[in-house]
Image 1 (spheres, rainbow over the protein chains, first blue to last red):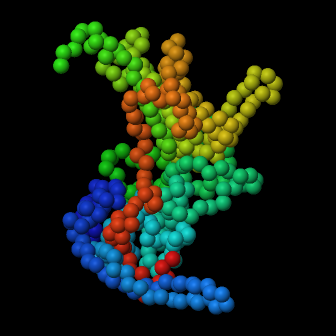
Image 2 (image 1 turned 90 degrees about the horizontal axis):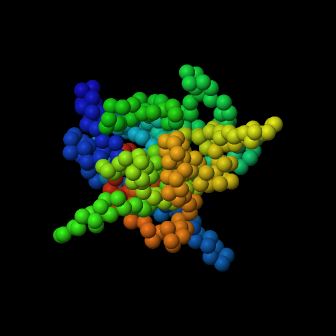
Image 3 (image 1 turned 135 degrees about the vertical axis):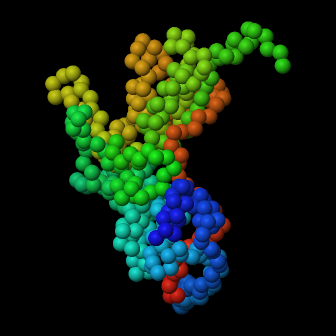
Length: 197
Length: 178
């Protein structure tokens, strides 16, 4: 438990991808190269014959980080990693090339971490940081144009317009980001994340 | 280097042209930044009656970003003064009609409400594209950095950076690389 606490404090001091790598490699966790044999489908179409092969190739560029808590199956919780929607290199490992999430049996994520990764992936997809999009239609079926956005928690066509926001002391605020991510996400300053605008 | 007194005066009070790229920047933050430069608050010689403000050119106004679901939730209201004259439009519809309207409204409201506001607002030039007329571009000498640090997409990373980044779990033996 004390190891996790130290790890979290050392990792939480930096918020970006490169910072995480530098701090983790220096502090506790060793890294080593692994080679794995993967399979690829190749299709060749001739005049009368189509050949479909399953080829085996060796992936030598895998850099794997050991866990601080080896008994924990979850890859994020065992290393004390907390993510934001900007950590695209970490999120890409949990999705397919089309943008769908890999099942929990493959990745061994815990339930809490799985939902955190899911919300981060959806927010990154709506901000055009990761591949994979959803239908841009309103509740009435009208088309919503594709615009730049960030920290969009809810589906694009799912929110109705707020016509009257109310008085100053009972104002209805716009919701931004996710509460669970903001509670755990790394932050340099002590000022909390603004979740309501 | 020798600086005559008259030349020094002209150099300190000269009017500078700045340019700002609004790609993936928040609309409110741009209004705060631009109003600051247009009034001259970034200069140590500032005084409200001394006319020390600069020109600002805002480019790519149609690529502005809103956090959250504000494109659908935020509603702009107006009234024509006549009966049944209340107009309510969602932010993305307003942006369709005039892509520069949201930025210009934010900048105008950030400048203080006095008699100088309209003359200072004439020194703000907003364009939806990167097509700026030559007579404006040839005056520009400084580049402003936007308020939001834009995050990198997965396509902006090189193959080496992606491969050298450590993996968090080893995939199954029968994994199909897609």
